[in-house]
Image 1 (cartoon, rainbow, N blue to C red):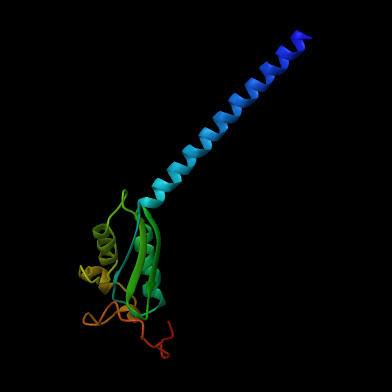
Image 2 (image 1 turned 90 degrees about the vertical axis):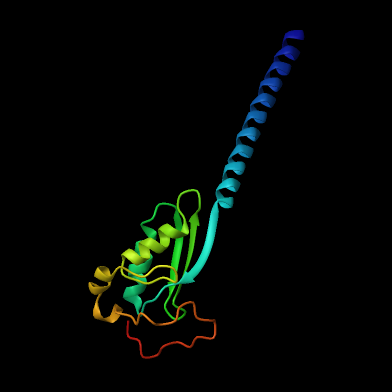
Amino acid sequence: MKKVILSIVIIATVGLVSCKNEVKKESTKTEKTTSNELASTNSTFGVRGNCGMCKNTIEKAVNKINGVKSVEWDKLRKQVNVSFDKAKTNLDAIHNAIAASGYDTDKIMGSESAYENLPACCKYDHEMEMSLKSDVKADENSNH
């Protein structure tokens, strides 16, 4: 009888120890996820452009940067919204990538040689306003 009781106590103890380890591992994962979310930075800034092809080029240039989580260029407002891991990249790298693809940002002028190689529909006015307010009306004449 003592052997049966002793066996039950040993099995129960082993079971409790393994449960404690599983709980501990799960809390470690939660901490890592939280620290990754804290490293994320969101930014919005002006970028000149005209059409859907501009949108593709701008977003493609930004997405090539290690650490960028998401990017969206708004054609009507002439601005980009970007989310990135600030431990892996920074705003200067993002501005430089856009400029290298031929587009002006509110901080850096686009590469002139890249601008010259853009399709005709993408040749924007270098004086156009950027980061327009929310009352912008849709451009019904744009076919791009």
